[in-house]
Length: 464
Image (cartoon, rainbow, N blue to C red):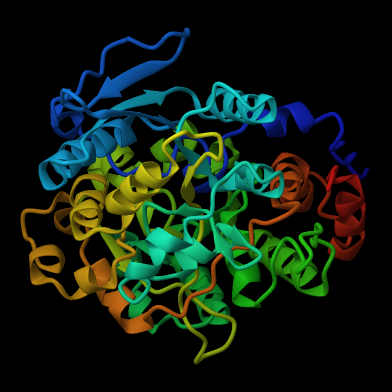
């Protein structure tokens, strides 16, 4: 008997409690780094004014302008306080005293949205995860930052700025490029006598997966039921977004149905499994991955940190290769996940806040820190050619993997597809990760994808 579809209405609380964007369950951050957390003269104690909130500060400077910043990721605190100290060294006539507040992702985003709606109690600057960003963008709670980005325009991948924009204005800057790649367990691939370098298309990937399954008994990959990385990747490669040009939900499309049916076929053949725990950021999944029970996973480069954090047994065994594409000759790279750091419009220090934001996220110093300490693939293109970055044998990310991620970045260049997170993206995301993909891949696979998507799109609650 056909299983009943999960109701979007019943699951809205589930969706609202999930972490969004590139963290997909924790954050978009790289590896844990106790040393980095202690650098920069940080005061990372429990000095927050509310339960569950903590604060960090840079080295205090007499006469410095007070700036406040909210982030959902504790590792970002060390980054920002370190950058504030560097700012003060380079701008002695315009010093800042930065207070960085951090807390659990959903709670912090909710608190920020309520403060914006009230027009008071907001920070000067905030990290806003990609799944939440549309809610802040559509209600004009953010300041345009075109003036501070334009000096760097020829030095960075602008896709990672333009995605946080509307009406020719840009409002946020990401921590990383977030280029999606395929991570292969080379022990499994060698046992199956499959060379990942020879996999170009998704059809190639399936044929390789059948060989892997036959020779090792292990699936080639896993599909999430509580997040969207694999279907979004495949859909972006078809040039289709989850929202249309006017920001309306756009999940009921022919291309989306094709992607769902393709993944269903992979599951039916045994090439693909359902990710233990439902997603790539669950404890069950990390143990499964670390145990070598799956041959590969397609995720952005910021997921390198997850391997270092949760998969110690795989060091020296994971190769990073280009993602498969639908047709040979297509660009083998799209951008996924993200955190847009933005200046809140209620700040009384707009110019200084914008200049500091650009210094953190676009300067050479900031981008080097993001790579060296957090493992984020830098949006500053010049670093892709810097041997001190790309050939540093002491860098823990380069040491862990068998291949060099910068080879992929240099090969595919800067003309990359990013998710459209405008308008109804946040509402659409909530439906996709709470019901759509659970229904599509686990609960109701007998329902044709076209019919499923029609029902799912109708359930999305989006208030323009």
